[in-house]
Image (spheres, rainbow, N blue to C red):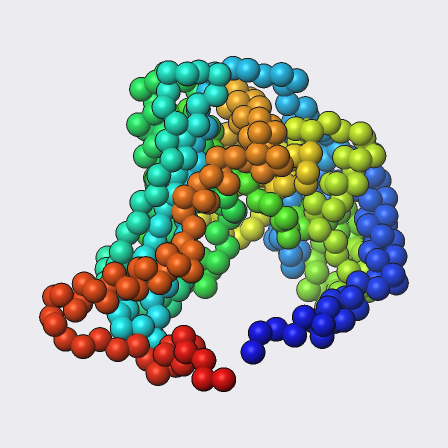
Length: 408
């Protein structure tokens, strides 16, 4: 039976009451006041952040500003930049193996897009590259008894293929002699690795680093774009600023205190808001134009300790005109004004022509996505292959058959 729309709608209407909305506005205003106070007291902010960064005694991840930029800085892209350049983006999708199908095969599909700007001699490229795996043993050569789930393994490999493919395309397009910007969708901070066996982590970091360091060698900036980010690194930085104790030590000073009543909260009964909501309010207050970015920040997520120094992840928030996006870049981009300037201008153009979202990423997604119909074609092709190979009968699980056939 399909979903009951009327019952669902009634519950949706109760999700956000007027009281909840007013409480959210109050929390946002209190957080904004804390942000304003911190931006006016930079010396105290930087000292507290530096101390907490070094001791590691805060119980949450937080950010600090990078280089010469400060928390309240806003930087505009060039007004009408028409410098010839090439933007390259990749995205991935997958078909997980299913216990209810007749084969344990899986698929990773990498979509790629290359678009030149202000130059007509470079060809546009749109393509997808599928890879079929007979089983999880075909996906990786890692030899360990401590295996990870097939779903995690597919996602793990897809992430690596995305960065390796964008690097391969950048290498190939260097021959055209134009500046190149590489783009990915999603975070560069792969915190999920913490749950994996060390050998998987080492293997991931090795391949991931190799691809990004090749981009650095070719002087190609890498941008990773996150729409509707759920991060609160800046909010947590403001917690450090507001901590009433001489030294930050969450376990010692605040053990057992409910999260809504912590002394570092900007108001009573506080529930954290998202960074992007705070930055959105700040951009409105400052009447910032489309293409404006914030200062560059560093995250102290513990997984970054495993990253080489040149690819440790920095980030900024970016005004697309439609949303405030989180944009992550490797340290080599953040530390090179020329590469940062190129990336910033290219990102502004991407969001302008893509109506608020980078067009190379939306097109790469379109190339990569595996629809329900595509998935069924994949399984049908597998079935046909096995029938031709062996002539044996292949069967779906009883559950899968019942899902495909209705008796009522």
